[in-house]
Image (cartoon, chains in turn red, purple):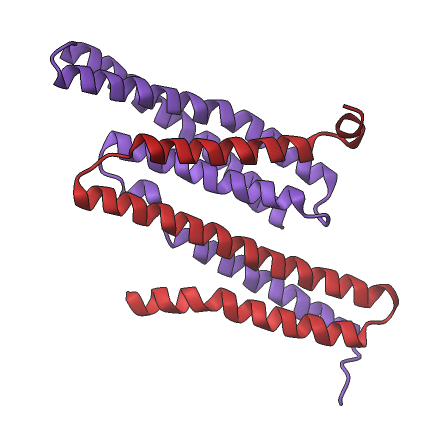
Length: 108
Length: 144
């Protein structure tokens, strides 16, 4: 069980290193638009892995926090709730600002 | 140095990498489920809201990426605009539930009021779950 978790943890970093290496190779051999398209595809793959890692790490942190509560027989504190709320409000503001059509965002 | 010169080969590599990346993303996303770890209603509410926040933050990061098309940014903002009020209602229900629990412990309210607050909180947890799922779907869709 722990072995498979260790493997899962290593895979994203391994893939990212492959993507980065290949991105460099493709960049060296790029020709006109095709090279740029391939580089772009590789960048998307790298970005995917990065977001997957970040999201999974945050979910793991949250899961560990909940596990600790269960083990200690406690409930979330007011500070923990406030922290989540502040993070949500910040993300929400950023999302809504970025999601607004360019003409609305730029002419406010 | 030998140069890779076959575009088809490179496209294939890129496609295979994208598939592997998606698989890795799915595996890593399935690794931990905070809601499954929770035991009490309060903990489940916290895990649900926390999961929403994690995905909301990932969506926000995606919208800051210059490579993300405006249409995708707008779709993410729309999914968040739908989910956020539900998540905030959940938060309000938690406050009520905790206040009533404290009052009951102090003997200043009735078990009936706690039952009402508990049912209300449970209903918001239930309501928030699909809202969070929709946001997660939107974020995953944006990554493709």
